[in-house]
Length: 357
Image 1 (cartoon, one colour):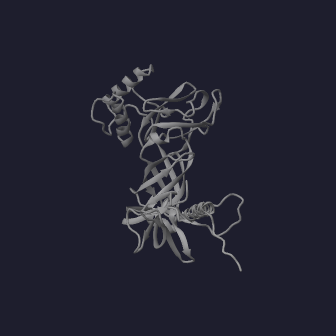
Image 2 (cartoon, one colour):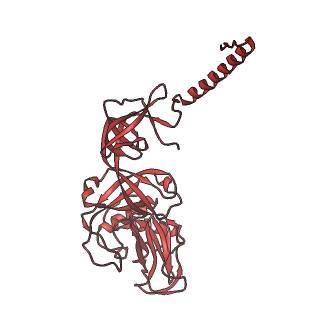
């Protein structure tokens, strides 16, 4: 006959303690397997306007560059300093003792200014420039008379020159605006002729030249604003399209095989804030031309998009509890680092997952 074995109180206590320990261990494992709330990087779905851009490469440079030839024959005794800007009334160069000075005007000097000369727009231009310098006190007109002579004499006196009241051809260099001196083509001491190149010059105004594809010709409108991205930094500024040329064939690279030439539309952009270009004489820049605008739309960072299938994008929405759910969206306009989205399950203010930065 078998006897039943009764557990003593001490043994029961040991089993109870073991059960509690096992329960505690099981509870720890359960907590470890419970879903954790998302605490990664998120961005908010925003509502507003999106502006799409077409980017083209441009070249920043000084406008209206050309090479200046000597107006006199003889030894070159003075040349301007490269990189400097000359204002109205400034001395430009000297050849064989003959000085040339800068005056503002669009008509090139083509004759001597002297008593008895015929009327002309060049006379009006001279008197206007002398008036701006403070020497001509009457109203500029096309007639060279005693008032013009007096003004020239005052100017000559200020320059410590003989007060002849006349200006031989070559004494005045007319330019529409201040000149910026480029590279020297001659040296002091050279023997110059009327065909000798002295130096390159340009306007002191900087512009950006760029080429549009024919397919983008609708973007090339004079007066349109342009975003200008400067090289070597995240700095941006703005500019305005100031000229649009007729379509033409793009020049091929030297040595390249002859192929069908691309048709382009050259444009010129004038920067709105020249101080943003400080330190840049010539540079490659990126231009952002507005191609499309969408108003009052939802958008997310481009990095928030995930591929739900081969033909369906979505975003990962994080709710208040920190749980993530994938929501399908329809993609619209891409604008910089954001993209337009729409869908029945998204709304302004929701948080979406983005890659850690």
